[in-house]
Length: 194
Length: 318
View (cartoon, helix red, strand yellow):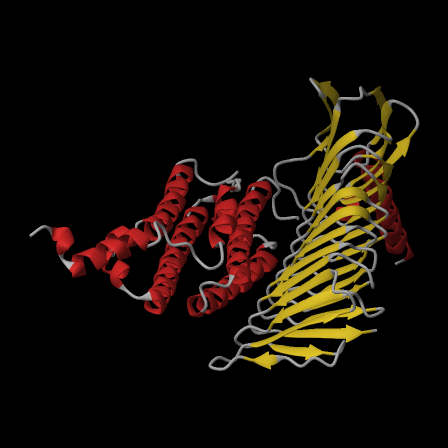
């Protein structure tokens, strides 16, 4: 008896043939994230060795998302056997899971970037200057806001506006850290009269 | 006794005289001129004091005034494509800003210019070339600048009027007061407050904890992002797009007249929506706290989007 003569096998083959080749999210978040990731980060004062590392981490995050989307069917062949509504529900769960993973990856990458920026010797000088107060306050505000948005995103990972706001808050934090380092370098030559 | 008083008086007079002489020697005068090419970048570096930059009709740069009392020399030289002006200072110093440089620099109207100060205040007017002004704690006052000016301070205030082009005003804790700017403007602040009465077509605000007050009555596109600072924006009847986002700050948008716009407001998990523009009521989702509101006024041609996580979103008619 050949395999194709089995009615269950035929149904299975039919379902596999009719299954979508790839699963796309309801909202196309990737474009926004990709655009943001493509933007040059301008690490003027960041350690030179940190740059490729940061790029690699972004690439890892991107790869994870792509792998989750494009490899979804292949890694989960049983999904092809599911009926319509079940498949949609399962797809949504999968999409959200992929976005949750991306969320964690980006949060981790951001922490590494912040750590790289705060570990430079120049920061010590900046922290002793009188300009540190507004910058530190701004950083505290941004970190609290980042945490708040992160929690909101965990509850609702498909909210594009939230993603954009979260990425903006992260970028502002990095910008402020870079600005603080620039200031520390200026201050180091100015004495204590400024 | 009277002899002693006389001695004391003469000593005081001598001290004052020497002090004045000292100051006269310290505040060295400067009066220099140099012609400048159209492609030359004028770079100005002054640490403390007051710097006034004015335009004139000559293709020359002139510097007049007095140098810092601790000045280690005045630089006024052409190096490649740059014309450098610098009041050189010691690496470390103490003293008051009153003893700083007091310079008036006259430049051609279309000069390309970059000025950096530490605590020196910058005053600039009536130029058309590309320019970037940076101070740490100095204030910047600028009026009628074209050529897409970019102004940065850390704690200094920025007060501007009539700037045009692609304008960027950036501060950390300073205050920004802008009026009658045209073109495209971006305000970037951390804890300082913004008070804008711009006439720009495109307005972008990035704020962290300071307040935003914006009268954007000629703006076609408005983008405001803030973290915890409160925002009050007024818009005209006709515009194309207004996007406002906050994390925890309250945002109020008021209209002089009911616009033709479609509204989408998302109150997030902890935010509240108050609609004073129409009778539409915010809806609560079934299983979560989120409040949201969508409605249209008139033809709905413009778009207003407001998002928050825990702030209040308010729509109001003036």
